Image 1 (spheres, rainbow, N blue to C red):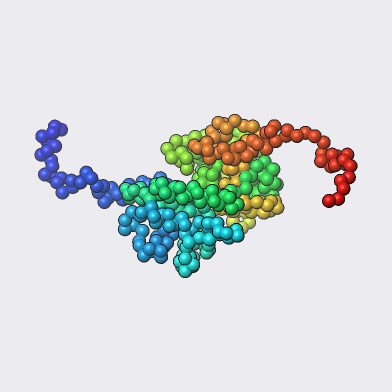
Image 2: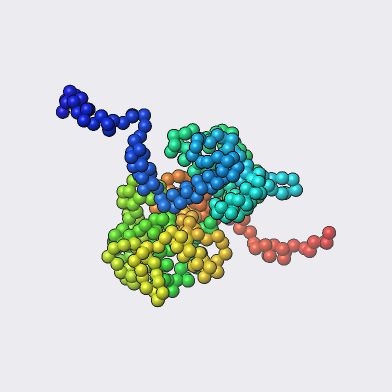
Length: 376
């Protein structure tokens, strides 16, 4: 069709012509659907929660609705000062959120309890605010240099006051063995053993990756090896299947689970009901976290345990055993070296020669050879 013929057709479609400066309403809806479908469910929930909090706080603090217009940097800075505790004299700490508003946020159900928020929570809510502004094609208040300076100095001040960023306890080899020891030969024990070992030995899988695995994603390579395939994950959104190995005890545990609960399709790890009956529905991410916590409690382990403990523990243990960082990242699929290095270095330092420089006699032997000291 030449240009002349195309021009002749314009009269037939004139009412459907679009303004090139704006997306059509149905195109906006389609774009939003793509964004929602391409975002992990846990991420969507955390975004909803953060935006609900912003809406409530803005209404109570400024009488302003979220969405009317872009927010200025001063509002974002006020949010930080309202929610981060700052040091006062005599070791006291305070934040600027008025008590009445604090109580109203709790009553509204958007805040769990009164008081300041953790630094990570404030940072996450600022990140969500920034993303929300970018989606609306507005300048984000979170990019203001004054806000970035405030956050940096607030982090330093909290560190000097002994407020550290909390991390879940890493499940290294010894606690992993303790968790597995609580798994008996009943259906729940067989399932939990296979789940824990796949998540840990299979590269420190995220809970979303574990519950996303289907029967068709695993294949038996030999008597001591399974391969399982990952598709779309948090750090690899392309959807291409990547196979990871599962060997030794982890492979044996998966074999035992599939023999005990055979299935031709559906979720790899399924819910259990009374009497050890295996359902057809898959586990949720929260249920994976509860399995880790329950097994840690049964093992009598102290610590702050969660599903992420398996991922951080895999990396930490790899550092302890001197596995090259590149091989670790190939299994975990971390994209940021900075993210993985904190765990990896913690493990490698435990086995570092630098931590074994002093090789003298036990302290008790040294003290027994010394003359008694006079009392002060």
